[in-house]
Image 1 (cartoon, rainbow, N blue to C red):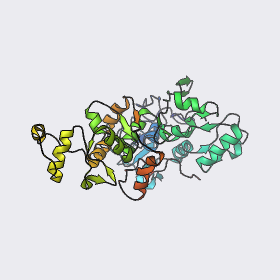
Image 2 (tube, one colour):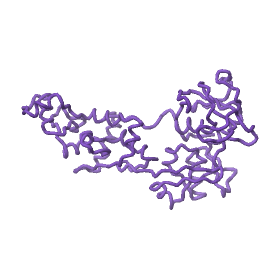
Image 3 (cartoon, rainbow, N blue to C red):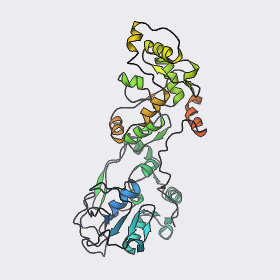
Length: 365
Protein backbone atom coordinates (compact mmCIF):
# COMPACT_ATOMS: atom_id res chain seq x y z
CA UNK A 1 0.00 0.00 0.00
CA UNK A 2 1.05 3.59 -0.54
CA UNK A 3 0.89 4.50 3.16
CA UNK A 4 -0.56 3.65 6.55
CA UNK A 5 -4.32 3.63 7.04
CA UNK A 6 -5.80 6.83 8.50
CA UNK A 7 -6.84 6.40 12.13
CA UNK A 8 -10.12 7.81 13.52
CA UNK A 9 -8.48 8.30 16.95
CA UNK A 10 -5.88 11.07 16.62
CA UNK A 11 -2.80 11.49 18.78
CA UNK A 12 -3.12 14.16 21.45
CA UNK A 13 -6.90 14.18 21.37
CA UNK A 14 -9.26 13.10 24.19
CA UNK A 15 -10.08 9.40 24.31
CA UNK A 16 -13.67 9.84 23.22
CA UNK A 17 -15.69 12.32 21.22
CA UNK A 18 -18.88 11.08 22.77
CA UNK A 19 -19.41 7.98 20.66
CA UNK A 20 -17.99 4.66 21.76
CA UNK A 21 -17.69 3.11 18.32
CA UNK A 22 -18.24 4.03 14.68
CA UNK A 23 -21.13 1.97 13.31
CA UNK A 24 -19.40 1.60 9.92
CA UNK A 25 -15.72 0.86 10.57
CA UNK A 26 -16.11 -0.17 14.25
CA UNK A 27 -13.26 2.16 15.27
CA UNK A 28 -13.37 2.75 19.01
CA UNK A 29 -13.51 6.25 20.48
CA UNK A 30 -12.90 8.30 17.32
CA UNK A 31 -11.61 11.81 17.96
CA UNK A 32 -14.21 13.43 15.67
CA UNK A 33 -17.55 12.38 14.30
CA UNK A 34 -19.96 13.57 11.61
CA UNK A 35 -23.07 15.48 12.68
CA UNK A 36 -25.95 16.40 10.39
CA UNK A 37 -29.33 18.08 10.73
CA UNK A 38 -30.87 14.71 11.67
CA UNK A 39 -28.82 14.70 14.89
CA UNK A 40 -27.23 11.25 14.57
CA UNK A 41 -23.67 10.99 15.91
CA UNK A 42 -22.77 7.42 15.05
CA UNK A 43 -20.19 7.75 12.26
CA UNK A 44 -16.53 8.70 12.68
CA UNK A 45 -14.98 11.54 10.72
CA UNK A 46 -13.09 9.26 8.31
CA UNK A 47 -16.19 7.27 7.35
CA UNK A 48 -18.14 10.52 6.97
CA UNK A 49 -15.56 11.80 4.49
CA UNK A 50 -15.36 8.42 2.76
CA UNK A 51 -19.10 8.37 2.16
CA UNK A 52 -19.36 11.94 0.90
CA UNK A 53 -16.12 12.21 -1.08
CA UNK A 54 -15.58 8.72 -2.45
CA UNK A 55 -19.02 7.10 -2.60
CA UNK A 56 -20.89 10.37 -3.26
CA UNK A 57 -23.43 9.29 -0.67
CA UNK A 58 -24.92 12.30 1.13
CA UNK A 59 -27.45 10.38 3.22
CA UNK A 60 -27.22 9.65 6.93
CA UNK A 61 -26.23 5.96 7.37
CA UNK A 62 -28.73 5.66 10.25
CA UNK A 63 -31.94 7.35 9.03
CA UNK A 64 -31.09 7.84 5.31
CA UNK A 65 -32.00 11.54 5.40
CA UNK A 66 -30.13 13.48 2.73
CA UNK A 67 -27.67 15.85 4.43
CA UNK A 68 -26.64 18.84 2.36
CA UNK A 69 -24.04 19.67 5.02
CA UNK A 70 -22.40 17.85 7.90
CA UNK A 71 -20.18 19.11 10.70
CA UNK A 72 -17.05 17.28 11.82
CA UNK A 73 -16.75 17.95 15.54
CA UNK A 74 -15.29 16.46 18.71
CA UNK A 75 -17.90 17.97 21.04
CA UNK A 76 -20.62 15.44 21.89
CA UNK A 77 -22.85 18.20 23.29
CA UNK A 78 -22.99 20.03 19.95
CA UNK A 79 -26.25 20.06 18.03
CA UNK A 80 -26.53 21.03 14.38
CA UNK A 81 -28.88 23.90 15.20
CA UNK A 82 -26.73 25.27 18.02
CA UNK A 83 -23.48 25.29 16.02
CA UNK A 84 -22.60 28.61 14.40
CA UNK A 85 -22.03 26.98 11.02
CA UNK A 86 -21.55 30.16 8.99
CA UNK A 87 -18.45 31.04 11.00
CA UNK A 88 -16.79 27.64 10.45
CA UNK A 89 -14.48 26.69 7.56
CA UNK A 90 -16.20 24.65 4.86
CA UNK A 91 -15.38 22.40 1.92
CA UNK A 92 -18.23 23.29 -0.42
CA UNK A 93 -17.51 20.44 -2.86
CA UNK A 94 -18.21 17.91 -0.09
CA UNK A 95 -20.70 19.85 2.01
CA UNK A 96 -18.47 19.45 5.09
CA UNK A 97 -17.81 22.05 7.81
CA UNK A 98 -14.99 21.75 10.32
CA UNK A 99 -15.35 22.57 14.01
CA UNK A 100 -11.66 23.47 14.40
CA UNK A 101 -8.40 23.77 12.48
CA UNK A 102 -7.10 20.38 13.67
CA UNK A 103 -9.80 18.37 11.94
CA UNK A 104 -9.57 20.57 8.86
CA UNK A 105 -5.84 19.75 8.56
CA UNK A 106 -6.39 16.04 9.20
CA UNK A 107 -9.13 15.90 6.58
CA UNK A 108 -6.94 17.71 4.04
CA UNK A 109 -4.18 15.11 4.55
CA UNK A 110 -6.52 12.38 3.32
CA UNK A 111 -6.72 14.05 -0.08
CA UNK A 112 -3.06 15.00 -0.54
CA UNK A 113 -1.03 13.64 -3.44
CA UNK A 114 1.85 12.54 -1.28
CA UNK A 115 4.36 9.72 -1.68
CA UNK A 116 4.45 7.70 1.53
CA UNK A 117 6.73 4.89 0.37
CA UNK A 118 9.07 3.85 3.19
CA UNK A 119 12.16 4.06 0.98
CA UNK A 120 11.36 7.44 -0.58
CA UNK A 121 14.39 9.78 -0.43
CA UNK A 122 12.39 12.75 -1.67
CA UNK A 123 10.65 13.40 1.64
CA UNK A 124 10.85 17.18 1.36
CA UNK A 125 9.36 17.09 -2.15
CA UNK A 126 6.95 14.19 -1.81
CA UNK A 127 3.75 16.28 -1.91
CA UNK A 128 2.49 17.04 -5.41
CA UNK A 129 -0.20 19.38 -6.78
CA UNK A 130 -1.72 16.80 -9.15
CA UNK A 131 -2.31 13.07 -9.22
CA UNK A 132 -0.47 12.83 -12.53
CA UNK A 133 2.71 14.26 -10.98
CA UNK A 134 2.50 11.80 -8.10
CA UNK A 135 2.02 8.94 -10.57
CA UNK A 136 5.05 10.11 -12.53
CA UNK A 137 7.12 10.22 -9.32
CA UNK A 138 5.93 6.75 -8.29
CA UNK A 139 6.90 5.27 -11.65
CA UNK A 140 10.25 6.94 -12.29
CA UNK A 141 11.51 6.86 -8.70
CA UNK A 142 9.96 3.69 -7.27
CA UNK A 143 8.95 1.76 -10.41
CA UNK A 144 5.46 1.47 -9.00
CA UNK A 145 2.04 2.38 -10.35
CA UNK A 146 -1.55 2.63 -9.20
CA UNK A 147 -4.35 0.61 -10.73
CA UNK A 148 -6.35 3.32 -12.47
CA UNK A 149 -9.50 1.20 -12.33
CA UNK A 150 -9.17 1.10 -8.54
CA UNK A 151 -8.41 4.83 -8.38
CA UNK A 152 -11.83 5.66 -9.80
CA UNK A 153 -13.87 2.66 -8.73
CA UNK A 154 -12.69 1.78 -5.22
CA UNK A 155 -13.96 3.89 -2.28
CA UNK A 156 -10.47 4.26 -0.79
CA UNK A 157 -8.32 7.27 0.01
CA UNK A 158 -5.07 7.58 -1.92
CA UNK A 159 -2.98 6.53 1.09
CA UNK A 160 -5.01 3.29 1.16
CA UNK A 161 -4.38 2.56 -2.51
CA UNK A 162 -2.26 -0.41 -3.50
CA UNK A 163 0.78 0.04 -5.72
CA UNK A 164 1.98 -2.46 -8.30
CA UNK A 165 5.04 -3.22 -10.36
CA UNK A 166 4.81 -3.68 -14.11
CA UNK A 167 5.01 -7.43 -13.57
CA UNK A 168 1.95 -7.74 -11.32
CA UNK A 169 -0.54 -5.10 -12.48
CA UNK A 170 -2.04 -7.46 -15.08
CA UNK A 171 -2.43 -10.24 -12.51
CA UNK A 172 -4.19 -7.80 -10.19
CA UNK A 173 -6.66 -6.76 -12.91
CA UNK A 174 -7.50 -10.34 -13.90
CA UNK A 175 -7.51 -12.00 -10.47
CA UNK A 176 -7.94 -9.20 -7.90
CA UNK A 177 -6.15 -9.04 -4.53
CA UNK A 178 -6.77 -11.00 -1.33
CA UNK A 179 -7.56 -9.04 1.81
CA UNK A 180 -5.06 -8.71 4.64
CA UNK A 181 -4.81 -7.45 8.20
CA UNK A 182 -1.52 -6.17 9.61
CA UNK A 183 -2.07 -4.42 12.94
CA UNK A 184 -3.74 -1.06 12.32
CA UNK A 185 -3.44 -1.52 8.55
CA UNK A 186 -6.18 -3.56 6.94
CA UNK A 187 -7.47 -4.07 3.44
CA UNK A 188 -10.58 -5.92 2.28
CA UNK A 189 -10.27 -8.11 -0.83
CA UNK A 190 -10.21 -6.27 -4.14
CA UNK A 191 -12.27 -7.95 -6.88
CA UNK A 192 -10.99 -8.81 -10.32
CA UNK A 193 -11.75 -6.06 -12.83
CA UNK A 194 -13.99 -7.42 -15.61
CA UNK A 195 -13.36 -6.28 -19.16
CA UNK A 196 -15.88 -4.71 -21.52
CA UNK A 197 -14.87 -6.38 -24.78
CA UNK A 198 -16.60 -3.68 -26.81
CA UNK A 199 -14.70 -0.76 -25.25
CA UNK A 200 -11.57 -2.67 -24.17
CA UNK A 201 -12.00 -1.02 -20.77
CA UNK A 202 -11.94 -2.64 -17.33
CA UNK A 203 -14.40 -1.88 -14.54
CA UNK A 204 -13.94 -2.18 -10.79
CA UNK A 205 -16.55 -4.90 -10.25
CA UNK A 206 -19.13 -6.99 -12.07
CA UNK A 207 -21.81 -4.56 -10.89
CA UNK A 208 -19.93 -1.60 -12.39
CA UNK A 209 -19.55 -3.51 -15.67
CA UNK A 210 -23.26 -4.33 -15.67
CA UNK A 211 -24.13 -0.66 -15.10
CA UNK A 212 -21.87 0.35 -18.00
CA UNK A 213 -23.33 -2.28 -20.34
CA UNK A 214 -26.91 -1.23 -19.65
CA UNK A 215 -26.07 2.44 -20.20
CA UNK A 216 -23.73 2.28 -23.17
CA UNK A 217 -24.57 -0.92 -25.03
CA UNK A 218 -27.73 -2.77 -26.00
CA UNK A 219 -29.76 -5.86 -25.20
CA UNK A 220 -32.06 -7.66 -27.62
CA UNK A 221 -35.28 -7.81 -25.64
CA UNK A 222 -36.75 -10.32 -28.06
CA UNK A 223 -33.98 -12.72 -27.07
CA UNK A 224 -34.43 -11.77 -23.41
CA UNK A 225 -38.08 -12.78 -23.54
CA UNK A 226 -36.93 -16.08 -25.02
CA UNK A 227 -34.69 -16.71 -22.00
CA UNK A 228 -31.34 -15.51 -23.37
CA UNK A 229 -30.09 -13.28 -20.55
CA UNK A 230 -27.27 -10.71 -20.52
CA UNK A 231 -26.46 -10.92 -24.24
CA UNK A 232 -25.18 -7.48 -25.26
CA UNK A 233 -24.50 -5.83 -28.61
CA UNK A 234 -21.96 -3.06 -29.01
CA UNK A 235 -24.22 -0.45 -30.61
CA UNK A 236 -27.35 0.10 -32.68
CA UNK A 237 -25.60 -1.03 -35.86
CA UNK A 238 -24.68 -4.40 -34.32
CA UNK A 239 -28.17 -4.79 -32.85
CA UNK A 240 -29.69 -4.09 -36.28
CA UNK A 241 -27.46 -6.75 -37.85
CA UNK A 242 -28.59 -9.21 -35.17
CA UNK A 243 -32.24 -8.37 -35.86
CA UNK A 244 -31.68 -8.99 -39.56
CA UNK A 245 -29.98 -12.32 -38.88
CA UNK A 246 -32.17 -13.76 -36.12
CA UNK A 247 -35.59 -12.06 -36.16
CA UNK A 248 -38.22 -10.59 -38.48
CA UNK A 249 -37.46 -6.97 -39.34
CA UNK A 250 -39.72 -4.30 -40.82
CA UNK A 251 -37.99 -2.95 -43.94
CA UNK A 252 -40.47 -0.10 -44.48
CA UNK A 253 -38.80 3.30 -44.81
CA UNK A 254 -41.09 4.77 -42.15
CA UNK A 255 -39.55 2.36 -39.63
CA UNK A 256 -35.94 3.29 -40.38
CA UNK A 257 -34.20 4.95 -37.44
CA UNK A 258 -30.92 6.68 -38.15
CA UNK A 259 -30.46 4.50 -41.20
CA UNK A 260 -31.00 1.29 -39.21
CA UNK A 261 -33.86 -1.17 -39.22
CA UNK A 262 -34.70 -1.35 -35.54
CA UNK A 263 -38.32 -2.53 -35.59
CA UNK A 264 -38.19 -6.30 -35.15
CA UNK A 265 -40.45 -9.18 -34.14
CA UNK A 266 -40.04 -12.71 -32.87
CA UNK A 267 -42.53 -14.27 -35.31
CA UNK A 268 -43.37 -13.64 -38.95
CA UNK A 269 -47.06 -13.33 -38.06
CA UNK A 270 -46.21 -10.45 -35.73
CA UNK A 271 -44.39 -8.70 -38.57
CA UNK A 272 -47.35 -9.18 -40.90
CA UNK A 273 -49.70 -7.72 -38.29
CA UNK A 274 -47.38 -4.72 -37.93
CA UNK A 275 -47.18 -4.18 -41.71
CA UNK A 276 -50.95 -4.15 -42.02
CA UNK A 277 -51.75 -2.05 -38.95
CA UNK A 278 -48.93 0.50 -39.37
CA UNK A 279 -48.34 0.60 -43.11
CA UNK A 280 -51.56 -0.79 -44.64
CA UNK A 281 -49.71 -3.63 -46.34
CA UNK A 282 -50.29 -7.39 -46.50
CA UNK A 283 -53.13 -9.60 -45.34
CA UNK A 284 -53.82 -11.23 -42.00
CA UNK A 285 -54.26 -14.96 -41.69
CA UNK A 286 -56.22 -16.60 -38.88
CA UNK A 287 -53.15 -16.63 -36.61
CA UNK A 288 -52.46 -12.99 -37.38
CA UNK A 289 -55.98 -11.99 -36.38
CA UNK A 290 -55.60 -13.73 -33.04
CA UNK A 291 -52.39 -11.79 -32.44
CA UNK A 292 -53.96 -8.38 -33.10
CA UNK A 293 -54.59 -7.62 -29.43
CA UNK A 294 -51.48 -9.35 -28.12
CA UNK A 295 -48.54 -8.11 -30.12
CA UNK A 296 -46.81 -4.74 -30.18
CA UNK A 297 -43.72 -3.72 -32.08
CA UNK A 298 -40.30 -3.66 -30.46
CA UNK A 299 -38.85 -0.30 -31.46
CA UNK A 300 -35.43 1.22 -31.02
CA UNK A 301 -36.93 3.61 -28.45
CA UNK A 302 -38.29 0.74 -26.38
CA UNK A 303 -34.98 -1.09 -26.56
CA UNK A 304 -33.25 2.06 -25.38
CA UNK A 305 -35.65 2.81 -22.54
CA UNK A 306 -35.64 -0.74 -21.24
CA UNK A 307 -31.84 -0.88 -21.29
CA UNK A 308 -31.51 2.43 -19.46
CA UNK A 309 -34.32 1.67 -17.02
CA UNK A 310 -32.43 -0.77 -14.84
CA UNK A 311 -32.37 0.30 -11.20
CA UNK A 312 -29.63 -0.52 -8.73
CA UNK A 313 -31.28 -3.72 -7.59
CA UNK A 314 -31.76 -4.90 -11.15
CA UNK A 315 -28.15 -4.08 -12.03
CA UNK A 316 -26.94 -6.07 -9.03
CA UNK A 317 -29.10 -9.01 -10.05
CA UNK A 318 -27.91 -8.77 -13.66
CA UNK A 319 -24.27 -8.62 -12.52
CA UNK A 320 -24.65 -12.05 -10.96
CA UNK A 321 -25.40 -13.59 -14.36
CA UNK A 322 -22.59 -14.25 -16.87
CA UNK A 323 -22.22 -11.63 -19.60
CA UNK A 324 -22.03 -12.55 -23.27
CA UNK A 325 -20.56 -10.07 -25.76
CA UNK A 326 -22.35 -10.75 -29.04
CA UNK A 327 -20.82 -10.18 -32.47
CA UNK A 328 -23.43 -10.64 -35.21
CA UNK A 329 -22.46 -11.97 -38.66
CA UNK A 330 -21.23 -9.27 -41.00
CA UNK A 331 -20.02 -6.83 -38.35
CA UNK A 332 -16.97 -4.76 -39.38
CA UNK A 333 -14.55 -2.71 -37.25
CA UNK A 334 -16.06 0.49 -38.67
CA UNK A 335 -19.45 -0.57 -37.27
CA UNK A 336 -18.18 -0.32 -33.70
CA UNK A 337 -17.86 3.48 -33.70
CA UNK A 338 -21.30 4.26 -35.09
CA UNK A 339 -22.95 5.15 -31.78
CA UNK A 340 -20.06 7.36 -30.70
CA UNK A 341 -20.28 9.33 -33.94
CA UNK A 342 -24.02 9.76 -33.53
CA UNK A 343 -23.57 10.94 -29.94
CA UNK A 344 -21.05 13.52 -31.17
CA UNK A 345 -23.66 14.74 -33.66
CA UNK A 346 -26.28 14.99 -30.93
CA UNK A 347 -28.25 11.90 -31.97
CA UNK A 348 -29.24 9.28 -29.39
CA UNK A 349 -27.17 11.08 -26.77
CA UNK A 350 -26.43 8.86 -23.80
CA UNK A 351 -26.64 9.88 -20.16
CA UNK A 352 -23.18 10.49 -18.78
CA UNK A 353 -21.90 8.04 -16.19
CA UNK A 354 -19.97 10.80 -14.49
CA UNK A 355 -21.09 13.58 -12.18
CA UNK A 356 -19.82 16.70 -13.95
CA UNK A 357 -20.10 18.75 -10.75
CA UNK A 358 -17.51 16.65 -8.94
CA UNK A 359 -13.89 15.93 -9.77
CA UNK A 360 -12.36 13.21 -7.65
CA UNK A 361 -8.73 14.17 -8.23
CA UNK A 362 -8.58 17.95 -8.73
CA UNK A 363 -5.42 20.05 -8.60
CA UNK A 364 -4.54 20.75 -4.97
CA UNK A 365 -2.41 23.52 -3.52
